[in-house]
Amino acid sequence: MSSLTFAERETIFFILKGNSTECTLAEINFMMLFSFLKYLQPTHYFQLYRNDRTSIFPKVEHFPKEILAQLIPEPNFKSQKALEYDLSWQAINKGYIGNVEVYTTFDKVPIVDEYRFLRKYFHPVWVFYVLMLRIFSLKNPIKEIIAWKKSGGVKRSGYLKNPIQYPEWHSSESFLLKEKPFVSIVIPTLNRYEYLKDILADFEKQTYTNFEILIIDQSQPFNEDFSKSFNLNIRHIQQKEPALWLARNTAIEKSKGSIIALSEDDVRISPGWIENHLRCLDYFNAEISAGVFYPEGSSIPPERSFFCLASQFATGNAMLYKDVFRKIGLFDRQFEKQRMGDGEFGLRAYLHGLKSISNPFASCIDVKAGTGGLRQMGSWDAFRPKKLFSPRPIPSVLYLYRKYFGKKRTLLALFRNVPQSIIPYRYKKNKKMLVLGMLISLFLFPFVILQVVISWHLASKKLKQGAMINQL
Image (cartoon, rainbow, N blue to C red; front, side, top):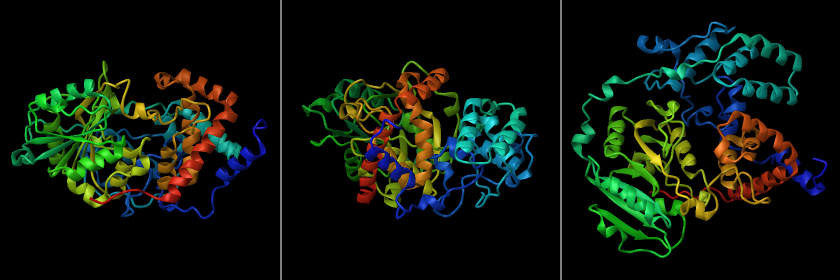
């Protein structure tokens, strides 16, 4: 840090110290199922209590016997509470979707059980990362190292290989499908006619036909006749300003359906896409069906291949009741020309207690168009700026983190994600390359810190200005 200027060091100190007048709901809203999760999942939806002060995690004693039989108890836990919390966390992540009583408070568990939990579900590199963070944050190093060593007997779990199944899904009768509600499909587009024609061709093949498509077209030049060749009920609306969240909000406001489906201009879907989204809303009595993406030429990731309570929301593949927007508002335009607007909306829905289901049967192929859209606006990747003095991450990310999770969790998220972002996106799942990225980040530390400082100040301006969420 010695290579930084005095002004830069003062700015970093301000970030670390924080603004004493800044107070968010998140500062008093964290749950402590296992407190060490804050280091590895600092900005995860399920780290927060919902607005009614309930957690997402069910009490184990209320589990049906058939669910309890599918969970794997950890015999090495020192405390009974840790055992129960582990089973609850395991159930949610394996896909349990029930209506049993949930935790509203959590007891503290021994440090050794915190490490045992991490060893069970995370790579040893991340467990060691937590140990280092704990030591450098002035926790008792002897206690930490002893607890870390004592937890060494815990084996990594492969629990997601056997997720909880819902066999009645295929045979159950859907009353929603019988009612045939009118669905409005929202597709914003920007200079991607070549890709848009493919997804529209997919909509021509849908098994469910009672729908309209609203295309909010920001392309230059605008092709007024583009949509006329498709055998679809399309409203092709020109929007001169290139603004993604404005486009989606406009389409929702103009929509005629009681149900909104959100899609994109560079995805591909199967003929049962609309039908499977509707069946999910009906089967689970949910407000939101959150579809799954997978890259072209690949398949659905194993961890997304089963039904579960959704911990993320993507506007490129989702279906929800229009009333959801009436309850919680439209998309926040503070994310305009930047990222995470859909993540913020999903978090807002979670905090309001709305049920969102990750739906693998409504999957779509992400074509990842090389031009147009957010890529053209220059903010495709949240943590990998293209220029040396551009903000890292883009300011909307820190706006989201600080607004809902507070300063401390935001810093933990930066520690967790910034070193990885040094490595190009295509290597993000390569563990060796991630370690290399952390080493490289040490040499680039002054520049990276400056990028974070820039982002932090731009996010502060957003926070001061406040949310730009219109009501439906």
